[in-house]
Length: 152
Length: 152
DNA sequence: CCATTAAATGTTATGTTATAACATAACTTA
DNA sequence: TAAGTTATGTTATAACATAACATTTAATGG
Ligand SMILES: [Zn+2]
Ligand SMILES: [Zn+2]
Ligand SMILES: [Zn+2]
Ligand SMILES: [Zn+2]
Image (tube, rainbow over all chains, first blue to last red):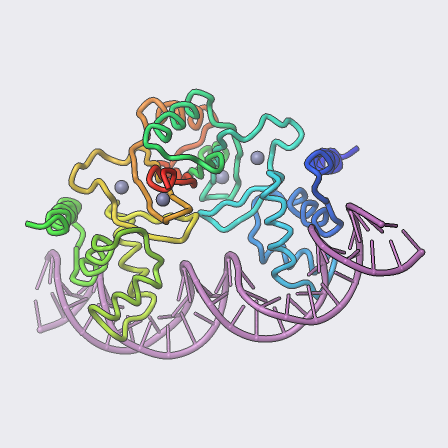
């Protein structure tokens, strides 16, 4: 069983547990995300979708699938770059209490890493102390240069 | 001296110290940001700019001014909503080692608050341990409901 | 199984956000 | 004042995202 198949199987199980439907179209978009080396824009994904699955697809098709996948935590949206990627932790379900994305401005690679537990609680505490009630766990997008690009 | 005048004076001094130019146009956009109650989209600012300062202004005018102000740390861009606002800490120069924006999805208000020092160092440590070198201090956008909206 | 409802997809059009490219003007510095 | 740099003016278009409505497919209950 390949890596993508394994992740896809986890994603399917997640959907069953949540009582939501992993339709063929959504699975196809998920597959596109999984087979990419890095984050992709919605229109890049649309182009690939048209090539691989359905030549006359329109933007709403992609945006709907992406919205679904993001809602289910199977994919993430990087708002600082308008890009989408598959969650890197679907099979290890550590949860997303706080997630940091390290975006390399040099090579475009993105690394997803869980926020340290103490950092999360520090944040939550300061947020709570202001009477603010969060509706989603925070995603932090940090720009810079990745380890690989720093060597070269 | 009014609040906006005081902030504007600080901003001007900042620019002098940095050897960059606070031109009339940039000052006007800064003024627009300062007189708003909340964050604004670039096109909202453009409309106001056209009304108040220059009726034939075009998008690049606003985007250039905003880019400048953001680069100088005098304004911030909220990438999750495509909005811009004046920095709330221009006069108190505490730095921006880490900043949290609490965005109320109910009333649209945004509260800018410094990230707790320990949370910042936790973050930095985990980022550094991956060999990643940041090029900007992290801005965290947290969505939810503000204290005021929670009461009602 | 069939009728009803709900969810998903198809389709057209348009709204919103942002930048490329090149011309001109204004400042800076020697 | 000449040369170089920075900022602005202007036109056009690229890039990102959604509204609105029609149609199809799936789920539910008799
Ligand atoms: Zn994830
Ligand atoms: Zn890199
Ligand atoms: Zn600030
Ligand atoms: Zn509110």
